[in-house]
Image: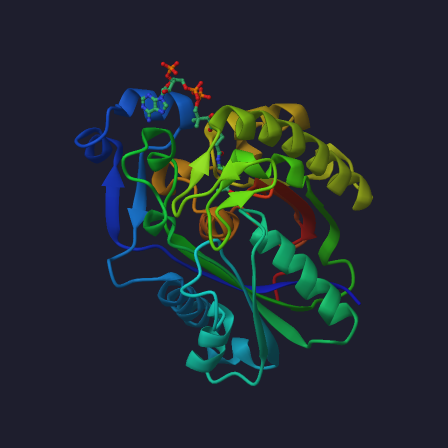
Length: 324
Ligand code: ACO
């Protein structure tokens, strides 16, 4: 049974933090951040705004675009997040309760590719008859786990959320392939602690994001290339069949390397990281919705998604767009 994206909504907090704002309290500059990352500004959640709040607003955005009936038949909610409100209850259960859904609910923790991992889970569940429709959300308040004294990470991240409904689509549409991967040997390159005081390999954990930028950069360029090529092959397509590339919005140089390896011109790549920074699991849905609003996505288009992040993990998918 073909399964794909039926509806999409997003939310970003209204508070904007520019590179100049960062330079007022960190030893950095707009020139450094722009030339190394492409990021100009990012959104920051209010002090009392958490992943659950952003997730709810993204779903409300979805309902405003697609109507209240979009939630009919949703019997699972998944929230992919690296900054949940609590260990438990899971954030998805809070969303389930908010919308009064008769649905199972769980969170998924897989670094930035979490939203793509969750789409793969949802697609499989619908195909197996374990779910009718799944509400798949990526919601992040990375600003709350950022060390604002660490210029090597503080300039990169932003807050936001995206929500999609996954369900049956007509023949010839929907997800054609998924590629999911992990290499835990690289876990020390990007981490934040929880209960244990250290990770395998003797890495000491703290309660904010730690990142070895160079290691993650090299890893990202490698897996963005291999995962996209594999996803296109598994989909039975060729690089030139891809209508639109929607990569994880982490760094313009990483996106450019992937774009060049795929032989795509910029017209076929969605980039909005200059406005939002890296919003982790929310980055692909936010970019996709912008592409839809800009009229860059049409029924039958083959979309290519790819992401990488903490774990280390990666994911890619090819989806043939369905417009009812
Ligand atoms: N402003 C000014 N200087 C800085 C800043 C800053 N904000 N940050 C670092 N520097 C300095 C460093 O201290 C270093 O100085 P040194 O040479 O005196 O030691 C110098 O700039 C160069 O640092 P590099 O790390 O070599 O810079 P690089 O060109 O690699 O860019 C960056 C750093 C942007 C972090 C890059 O490595 C990168 O994007 N890596 C990938 C990060 C990423 O995408 N992470 C998200 C993962 S997804 C997830 O799951 C959350």
